[in-house]
Image 1 (cartoon, rainbow, N blue to C red):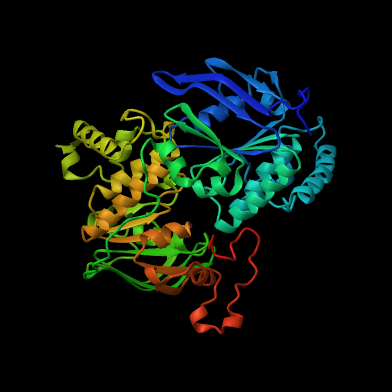
Image 2: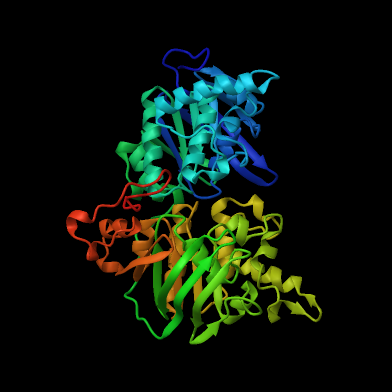
Length: 541
């Protein structure tokens, strides 16, 4: 359905001369953008390029300092998100805006109730939700609690919220950053269906493969400016990467062959039962040698998170652990004194956690404080009985410059950096401590192409310096490109292990679905159907 009052043949969205500054930082500068109706339009750029700021202006979170917005050919002032919703604009944020202990139905109508009585609103919404779910392939149980849903299904709830409010324009900010490959593929099918029904989609992403696969047109932003808008069919990943970064970018990981040395990490029979009595790790055996990267592949939720947490020294409260962990031949305790994160760091373990905001940063602390987070007891940061803040700030500035963290302001709170620059803060802190063993979870989640290249080079450089790296990622391409060996986890177990240069996506996909083709007749090596929100194919795409 066209937006109310739309002029025939007019673009769904037109932005003219949009500018926005936050103090001395020019987030958007004189931006022009035209998005045709009934298309999927990608907006790409490095972290901090101004993509999310521009879309936040369109959705009414920010007011532009200058410029004009036209919806359906007519100028409109979007003072807040309610005005955007009335204009037919919906937005799905990278970090979902859902009430976890509400049902799907309650979340969908929240803020859009028909009147003072909730029951009639819920009844009418249930019918509308059923129709929308059927029409767009967004099936989800309306009575399920959001906290019990997979991430992929929570995203469907966000899309349903926008459609329930009659959105004709849908903005998605890094929508696949927390999805498995199979969930991402399903999302793309949904988006194509929405486009074919006449909806207009804006997709903010840093993943060039997704841009090439799903969009009709793509616009590139760099340092707050719009540098190009092209038809997707008339460009390619290399050209887009160069436009994003302003230089040629390697789209592959270049690394010499590994030269493994002595074992650094040895894990034998590691088991973990969580506080609810659920066995999360079921007898893990693995070994990583100096000078090699072991990649752990698997669908999210199969024990990778718990493995990183136990090795890093902060397992879930109330968990029961068994087994043996040795670092450089010395046993690491599983509990009690010496089993926490501080003791692990002192033993030579660096840890980049999977969730940078919840586990890697203190969001209200400054960049310079976060760079010392966990290492503030180090001798070089001490001045008698007090911490040497001047030494910490100097160390932070060196890391900010070395890792090209933007903006290069050590006094800025972590929450005010883009997601990719937040990740750089965590990676810089852990890698620069030169650990014997680096645990790194989802190293490039939500990170742009230039930063991905940089982080990958740093991981390989650490390996080449004779360190051991345990890499966990849901990005199978990343696992295959960076790893020397690949172990696949399924249901808390190591299903199998492959040399990276001999592994295939089909083989790994079967292992990720719980089937080992090497032990199973070919006709039986067909992955079972996945439960909702899981990836039966194992992210082979």
